[in-house]
Image (tube, rainbow, N blue to C red; front, side, top):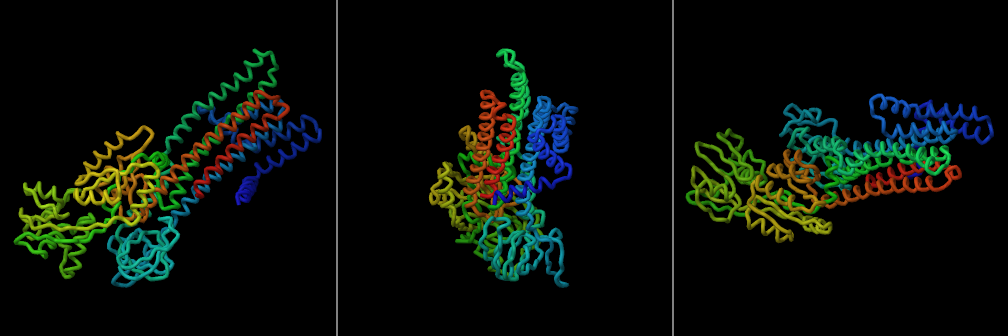
Length: 629
């Protein structure tokens, strides 16, 4: 398969343009003329024509860069080496330098394009139309025209146009475009679906939960497109290294051509030839392309698995994970609450307790608030919650307050309510309700641990990571979760500012070569996600703020993708280091041979050409292994 790709690439290169094809034909004719004993002038003319046709773009770039003051780059190295070879009478080598350099550059460009197209193909699964159900009948619209609450019909085989919830119908979904999962996922009323999913055999109706630009699909598309601009530390090092490396190589080549002949009393011809070999073999192309390509391929490989990374720097940081800090609700637990018990206080009853709580939480996006509203609608379907409120306030991580029917209602956690009342309340609930300054009672919720959480944490420990949990929940519930999951530590009853402070403390205590990863999904996690070395958000249930603040998004709320992301990150970094060591190693071997053996006997310039192009192609193929993994 790889041989076929290589042959197809060569064919495409030869057909790229007529001038290059003519130059290649002249190069072959020149080789035949050289072997056939034709005059040196004829051979020179054929190779010079070939050289100009093939290398015209290289010579043009070199000339323009010199005029701009940007002298020392790989184009300059190739130009000066090939012109020097012509001056020494090595005509075939001079044309060969340019020919194989251009071929190598073409394959580098093609590899980058393939990696980019692979990512683009995965992110081209959006629906081009949506069937909107209206009172006048069904209407075909663009997904961008949909609003929250719109009812959309998705027929079998069609793509889901918007993030939403199934309200009728049973089907299966192909989710590989966003999640990387090949097995279809069953959906039924109440199931969440994302834009980009492909509907299976059943007709379903969904209620839009977001606008198109706010969907997980839109966010990850923008994220991956921007990823190429954020370089990893290794990439930045290579770029900076090249700025110093190229002038150093030119200086070393000049010294090689001048100093040894004077000191050793040898002819200049041989040492100038060796200097030209040094220029060719020292071209940094393999380093300049293969390291960025490694990280770009890593980003593509992660995207195939439903892991969307905003840039190479985050992939490299993830490879150095030292500790992983988790939010609890919606991350280690499902985030789907249900009411376990209600504890009304006299003179309030259960109905009033739940009613006041539901009215206050009607506009809340917190899972606990959504649970209370859902339970109230289930028990009392005829009562409306879509009425106007007064003085609505929400304190993230604490609670909400609202004025309703002339009464002031406060709903929140124990610490918030105790601060409001100036007195302690019994620690037997997760949510407390205060009406006109009087405690109406408490509601106890339950939130199950994710099915795969234990295995995921076990895998993370296998990577040597320390595991911690930060939660806004009660100490008792947080302690229960931490014990069941065998975490290394936890903190409870935390506000967003508390989580951020604790995270920064973890990061400052981290070893120099290690990084801290934060995993969360809610609005209150946004400060920590943005401040962590690597912020990881749950893509399915994650809030808008969390998705924007995170550096990596795990689609479909699949926590098991976190160990996969670390594995891909480590493989990417390993591949980049392999490319660096391999490229430098090959070049050093050729330089040593060139400087110590009779170069005329072993055709040192040809060896340098193949070493440079070969190192580049090997690095490219090695990088693409990450994309295919």
